Image (cartoon, rainbow, N blue to C red; front, side, top):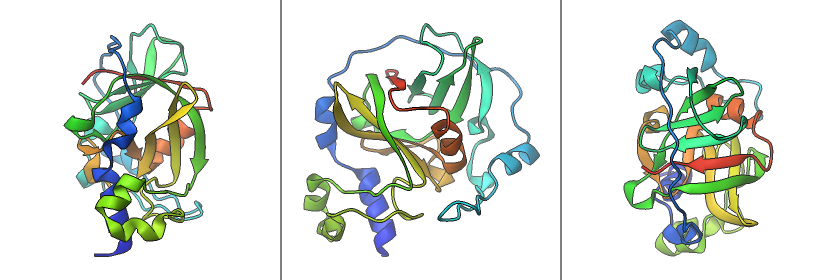
Length: 221
């Protein structure tokens, strides 16, 4: 098994250690979906290859993505301010609240059932093509990750991908992120130990609109 696959698998199976800081209460918000959305041809353009990235990103294999998870603008009623990110793990969606009663909706992968959490956080920092460093717990369970104790270099095999938003609470990094993935088959699935993944093309779209200090609301699953 190659090291890239191993490190990504370890990231997704993850560590519960980061969830210790997430003693969070439920937040009641809701959204609604409209009919329509991208056609297959439109999706092929939206999810085309990104050859100009430092590490060229392949086009999304649309055969592996349910069309309901294509990026789209939907009616969305919420008391949260425009610019807020809302994660709905029960529906596998991430919303970016617009200022006109709508939201941009992205299909997502979410934590495994045992690692689901809800409450509020904020974007404490963000990075392009970040370094990934496994936790001590991950290294303890998977000694082969010790070679990445000083950080895994950026690239397509890096679990965090091309862009990442690091989630914080009260000045502390929660060890949870919103990250980018080149694995379309994970969208609509529970795969991680607390993190949320978007297709790389969607993550670039969200990343450009979500500055540091962006509020993030995680709904109960």
